[in-house]
Image (cartoon, rainbow, N blue to C red; front, side, top):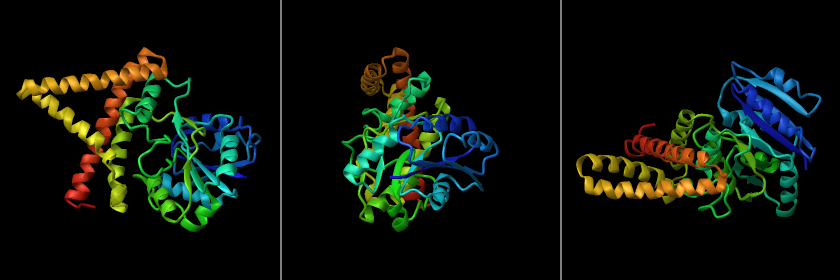
Length: 322
């Protein structure tokens, strides 16, 4: 098993340095690394080249097209029989490739995805954001959970596909707005076997501030409607939860102003919900500070996604704008 690790990069030289350092610690050594700079103004060429004597590594610079097409650029130049995709803001455990290799030999998957987690070095905000993206009270725990809803769709921060998939299905046809989900659906429809490797986790930094996190999740909400436009059957009831929460929160605020009895009911439900998040996060992260911040990050996760979802639902589905 020879892996080609493909990493699209855009104006994040420090992140790629931290990621590449973790790859030098891998216990399984049969792999190459392809870093594709997607038209960055602040490029990482010198950083990548500094790893030339530590990794089998190649650096490419191309015009900006977005992460999906940048991964395709890497696919075209990879020599491995299995392609592994990471986001540049990930840290990779030393036994990651060993775990994946052993699992693939046993289960013969054509494509896989793995979960993400918070590293001990992350800031409290990053840990809270990680909680919001993996909590059963926000995402339902479907991003890396065995008990997911419907088909499992690997996410591109931690995803692998065989060369056979690339040769038959091709690469990404969307460069952003849900490109990884669209790709995994086409892999499913082509008859390939996709599965979750639960132990193949990465430490995903995501965003370093709540404002950045809001922008990212608003984009994710819009991406879900983009997937619906390509595959209508892939829109499930669970995907409406952030929008329902957002509408309920706005309704509670309005009721507190115009009809307080109903507002009191809404306040009680919200309080109960946030208490569940607080105590669950406290149990998971062993930190009261992270637990408090998890309330904020979970609120942002739900409302940002919900507003993005509602925006494009009306724009692209109701009013049928392109």
